[in-house]
Length: 163
Image (cartoon, rainbow, N blue to C red; front, side):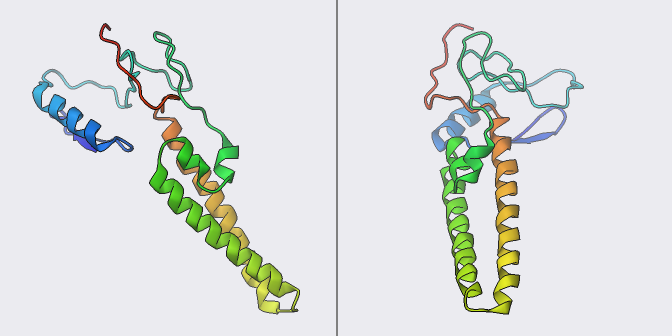
């Protein structure tokens, strides 16, 4: 979902928002008037989905309502697709799992060809091994950005009626 500021024209892209929630947000944004002076703040502010308090980067618990948020873990990214499943991105998790399985299949295939004295297998083993390592590092880096967007530990968060 892309939201454009009516005052300054800046755009923000929000990923991982469910379809029904996008409709609610769009309806609310149409009704809210954003008038006033242009602010100098350049960073996106994240709000707690339960109490609407501004969250501090690096903190994994809302200081007001004690809602907990997911933490970074490099170990999860090493398992095929788990870094994405952890942050509730199942499509990316499935794609990542498929890519991992294909790369591992190639690595096993070329390793088995090494025992047959196939000289080209060494080159391909090194190439696909490097590609596999690059893919793992890219997955760790990319999936960690979702954690920075404060993914709650619990799936359904009910907002508090009083702020």
